[in-house]
Every structure is written in C-alpha cells, then in structure tokens.
Length: 223
Image (cartoon, rainbow, N blue to C red; front, side, top):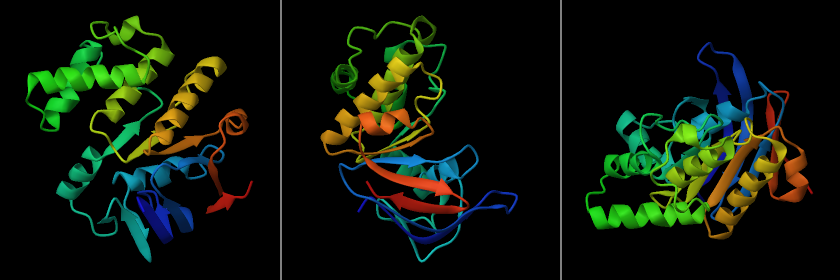
C-alpha cells in the first residue's frame, strides 16, 4: 500500500477543519481522481501526502511507509524525492533550457554520472513524447508542452506514486485530454497516479477510481 489513511482529520493553518474522518488508500498502478468543488479540500488532502500540510489526527496516516503524523523535516525531504509531483502552473525554471531543468533535479537528488544523467533525460522526454526539445526554453513551449516537461520531471527518479494537483487547470480541453491520457499510460506501467480535478468530462474518457470531497468528507464514488 502506497498511501493508507484511516480516520484522518485535516485542518488549514488557521484551524479551519477542511476534511474529517478521511479514509483513503492507494496501491501500485492505480489511477485515482479526487474531485470536488473549489475549496472542498482536494488540494489540502494532496498537500498532506507530500508533507506540506500537517495532519491534525489520525488512526493511520502512512505514505510510502512513513507515519505522516510524526514525520521530521528531513524525512519529508526524503519522501518528496520518492514522489513525482505535478502542479497546475508547471513550476519550470524559466531561466534555463528543458535539459537544464531536468538536469537540475537529477543533480539535486544525487545523480553525478554524466552519461546516466543524459540517458535518463532522454528516457523521460521520450515517455512524454517530447524528444528533441532539450535545448528549448520554457517560454518557447505551449502550455501543454510545458506540462509534459513537468510530468517528465516528476518521472525522473522512477517514483511509485505521482501526485498531480489540477494538472489541466490552465489547458484547453484538447490538450487537457492528452495530458490525462499520458497520466493513464503512466499508471499502466505500475506507477500509481492521483489527480485532483474539477473537469468532470475527463472521468468518462479515462476511467479510474473516484473519490469526492464534499461537505468536509471524502467518499469513494462507486461506478
């Protein structure tokens, strides 16, 4: 089990309770949506998974074998190196090329061998259908292309779990479909993918497990 939450309570830093009694689990290779209105707790739940928001209380709150109710700062940093995280606004470094963006992450996570770095960059760019764009700058790419590079960055260290928080929020419908299709392909390789979204049209086209945030609760929707 990659994520196991049982009876988890989540609040914002101002003590406003966002979600109460959360039961949530993720296993290898699963493709999971978290849906709900703006402010319903989707992103807050996601932030607890990568240690950006503390959990108030829980019977169980484990992510990749770590107890999230008692996790140190150094353990959070270690956890994030084992996750792939994709945001709505890409978060690419705008002053350097695609290759330098990806190289920066590899070097920051301990890669040193130039041949292996180059090989891994080529592998992830191929995986997201962006081969040949290594020397382009982020501003030279479309929104969809930038998101593909952000996904490539998330895949660099072969994570078991990819978290994508509203990854299609800034994209047109056709591009959004291609990005969700890419995530679906990634999950088919055995990497679990968890996506927060309010784009309901994607759920029918790319089926997955669906959890809904509503009225301070998280519930699994049965197909």
